[in-house]
Length: 396
Image 1 (spheres, rainbow, N blue to C red):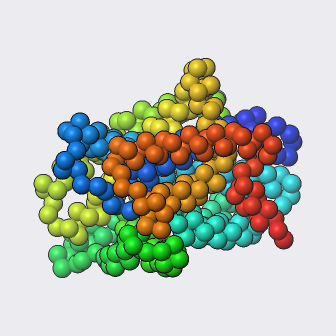
Image 2 (image 1 turned 180 degrees about the vertical axis):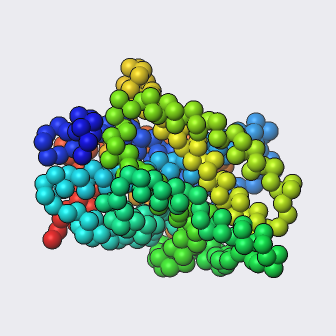
């Protein structure tokens, strides 16, 4: 561990101190996720007829939908993935300083996460924990490599190698067709269960068709490779201490580079359909460039929050309110799916709500969860699921 890293993290000789700004980022990400899931009705795209509603409500519906997906779509999950790799580094390095090898233990921890993800999937088909449990093994395989190797491997994943291969292959061979996963029947089964199924019928579908649909979506939209890359870069952030105040100048360069890269990428993404009509080139191109534009916006959020937290006292105080919410991110993420399923699905309240009303429900869920977190941490050091995951990790 470098000297700089020791100064930033070491509260005692053999353990990293908790990094509050990481909890701020984690709380921000989960807050954004609940807002997105709320307007999506938790992957249940059933909305009331808007033909007779006032013009202003149609405007707010569209503005909220487009605005939230532009600001948070894929970016919130990107922050979440980055912090997953960061947390792995903290746990792994804590054990390394004690003379222990955490890698086998972390494999077991990922199996426990898979079980927690399956529980979450009982209620919500769009959950991400199962994917994290599967992709997380990349951290075990790469954590002892040098920083140079990690940067190269992380960049390889971020650049969507399958998409690049497909574009080259389709450009050289006009008869080539990209692999398409027929996930339509799986989504159809989940929608039917959400629309008219009982709770147990929904659970049965969610654990098979729902999981296949979710993993197929992750593959088709480049989420699998992007997640692996962000895991690795999150681990690198932990190793180098980049979440410390002393690294703000470097985050300033990250912010500047993200802004400079975002605009040409966004322009090319919008222009490409006018010039390329081969779907076997255009589809992987959109996945690659779309994931990179989302990455740029995600880095703008991360660097902006770091500057606000470390440089502006008033904003730091406001952002610090997210710390307890971030410390209980897993519990909040899983309970969001349970609450949302109970509100919108057939087995629950079957609430028919437009987008404007749905985002207000999402804000309400967030506020209730935030209050519950503050109350919980008066007497506990871990959230309920966080405590379970920790105990399960060290059960043997």
